[in-house]
Image (cartoon, rainbow, N blue to C red):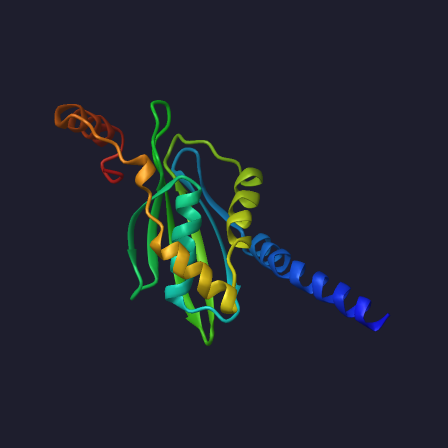
Length: 181
């Protein structure tokens, strides 16, 4: 009987970690700005027993799996910029990730920045961001996930374009938002 109770308790505690991060994510979630000025959606979680470099490795793998482009990453400063690809009807949406050390733990902050005129609802962004945070793991499992994520490359979405077509796209985007270019 004791073994069954111990096994059940272990399962409950193992399943509680992502839920705890999801709760922390929801508690730390904030929205600022408006459709007229652009909106920032932000949240953060602290992952136990995880280094900054390992957190960035995991985030890289998670974001590429989400069809995001990793624009830049810097393990020294704990920063990463990823972007949802633009399509024929939507502009790219940048996401800033900052990771800082908190003793033996890593605090991961994510900010999704929409431009003026782009619509996004907090009720949709909160669960999306918290789902991404729930994928982060600490300890031995986190280090293994980080090693795998750090090697992840997004070769499936490499695009070959004519230079003239590409320059026209950049010029068109610059008219709408020079900062994004």
